[in-house]
Amino acid sequence: MADLLYFTGTMDCGKSTLALQMDHNHKTRGRLGKIFTSNDRAGESTLSSRLGLEAAAIEVRPDFDFWQYVVDELTHGGRIDYVVCDEAQFYQREQVEQLARLVDELQIDVFCFGILTDFRAMLFPGSARLVELADRTELLQVEALCWCGERATHNARTVAGEMVTEGEQLVLGDMEDPENVVETAYEVLCRRHHRRKLTAARARATLSPEVLPFGGAG
Ligand SMILES: Nc1ncnc2c1ncn2[C@@H]1O[C@H](COP(=O)(O)OP(=O)(O)O)[C@@H](O)[C@H]1O
Ligand SMILES: Cc1cn([C@H]2C[C@H](O)[C@@H](COP(=O)(O)O)O2)c(=O)[nH]c1=O
Image (cartoon, rainbow, N blue to C red; front, side, top):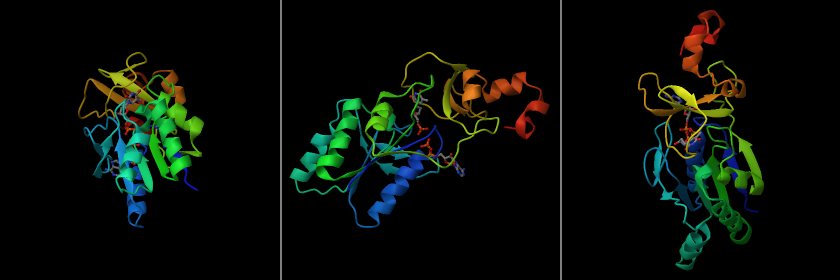
């Protein structure tokens, strides 16, 4: 039986790395797969992990039709045993439904990877549909940590160093890096600190070093 699986977690918890590992493990056992992604930070048609691995991928634009693509491939003599779908939060709800149809009607395994919620702590439409349809939703085991040491459960967006809760849902970006300050960045936080808009930089600026974990380092 094929499965529709959704591997999820915050930004920077290892989803893309796992996507590439899953592809590798299935490929080395002789299975044939396709890799898809959408709006990867490394550029179009690329699946990239912060551990340095990259693979060529098919870019999923809003009008892309998974069902049509796979049926075309099979009709022209191709074989597809599984598909790996990264940045699945950006997929349209209809595209997730097409993926479920590949599982049920063509017995193709579908492995999806993405973040559940946006910088406002609201579900992405693609992720919501995946949670509704997946055979299993799995939270990644590698915990990204909030600056306080708790498990990070939420994604925060910062603009010029300040956490924001208004703006477009889709804004590409990477984790905040104190060595390389950019206009828009992201930081993962526990829910308590996301609610209070207390980022690492604000905690350093407003709390005394004695109450900060790890001696306020980082
Ligand atoms: N220099 C490093 N050494 C070890 N692990 C690293 C390093 N840089 C990044 N990582 C790991 O890579 C993870 C991010 O992987 P990635 O697949 O890009 O995440 P995601 O797709 O979830 O955003 C980090 O949580 C960390 O565990
Ligand atoms: C929270 C949030 C994130 N994004 C963007 C930022 C990154 O480009 C990707 C997530 O990539 P990762 O591999 O999981 O680190 O999503 C966004 O557009 N909107 C958001 O609210």
